[in-house]
View 1: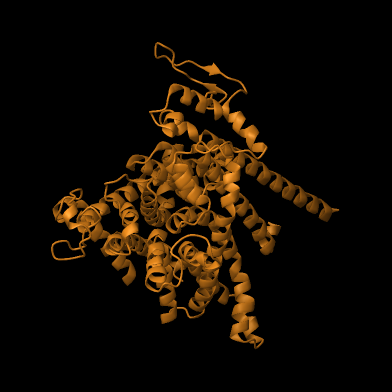
View 2: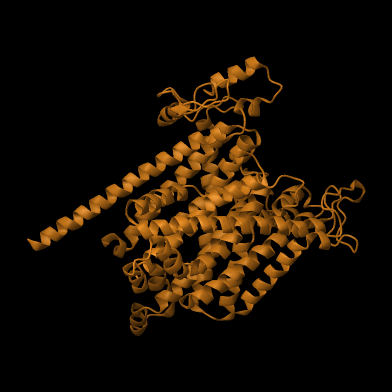
Length: 340
Length: 268
């Protein structure tokens, strides 16, 4: 009876915990979308003038504002100035841009591009796979560099190899991608002529951008793997495994790495957002046709604020989703957290 | 203090001195253009060569240190102060204040990749040094707030805090005199690593054309301007890149050293 009460309490806590997390997630998503929706209000002056230029006729301005809903109030209420320069409160109700954006968004519509009238969702869908491809490739590069390097450094603590790995990691953290990228282009595309300097035409075109984007992550991961390996090597189960007569290789790769990788998985998930943001710079360097290039060149460069809104929203949502998945995987991997 | 930390401190000190005395160190006017001396390689007259408009790269790198350090210092100071105040209030008072700040505000700010939020803000506000600093402060304070909240939660349970409360000390006094001085140590490490991040973010945004507008000698902007000419005049992009790398590396070395000093268990 006592046990079932404890189980019931445990279950209640778990359900309450999950509900609380779902509620926070909904609140966060709502706030992120609202912030992105209202970002356009930050534009100094009139977005129509910023997009069309001051030479456009009043008719063109009016037509533009009407087409993109900019003639409507931005929010539920506003404080416009009257002729005497005094501000007063005006309630607009549900007839505003904020609700329009939300309503459209729930139907998968992110509005029309200010420049070419194409749906923003269509523009983003065209570019999204290239960015995900780059982020995943960068992550793979980081893992392939970090795990062997971190394991070797951790198992040879204090030796020359360990110091070498630490220096490589420090270089990776301190070298910005816009310095690494052009350097790689100079060596591999210009001098050695092995790879293309930019574009996305051949499978090999992803190598340089992926290395550029993955460099910083590989450095962070190397440090983490090293620390994890050192920590795990001191655990009792390692002594037991060694006492059983297992080879050092089996001890490290089968036992230590399995446990040591748990915190690394968390970092990987959290770093996906950093990769997505970092991809903006990498895509710019290599002319990689992803979301970052769409954001910087078509969005910010041409003042197409709808495209900027869409890109920021999609990147943030991908990040939130990645964090959620990481959290789920982490709980599944580490029974201590699952129970607590 | 290990050798690498000493090297880091030395480089940071040298760069701070260079930034402070930039007008006396730079041999040429940073904005002075001369199309007859474009792309000169490094020489005795122009130590780091000249760029696409004949400007002296050494002088621009020297003044660029000012921008990087100025942005780094202001962003770290403002973010640390704002983060400390909000984190301390959340940690000390707990209850709904803490639930709102740590459960909601932190999660909202962490839902955006930092650089993306800065890019979005500058994209809508327009480029400029002050707007860039504002954007970096807005993304920067959360890290400090989380750290201080955790520290305050721990320190507020110590006996000396309970004793101060029993003696009738006010909340402000307990927080400022008793808790914060004992909670602030990890902030120093966070601040040094945060400064490296701020310097890199400024350079990244300037590289994208969203930071310090030209002709200011930001290192990120110099790399962006020299990118097209790197095949013929690699020094135009390499030298500001190396300068940026050196500063960030030095700050990271300093941060690592401070971490080892403040937390001996991390010396692994």
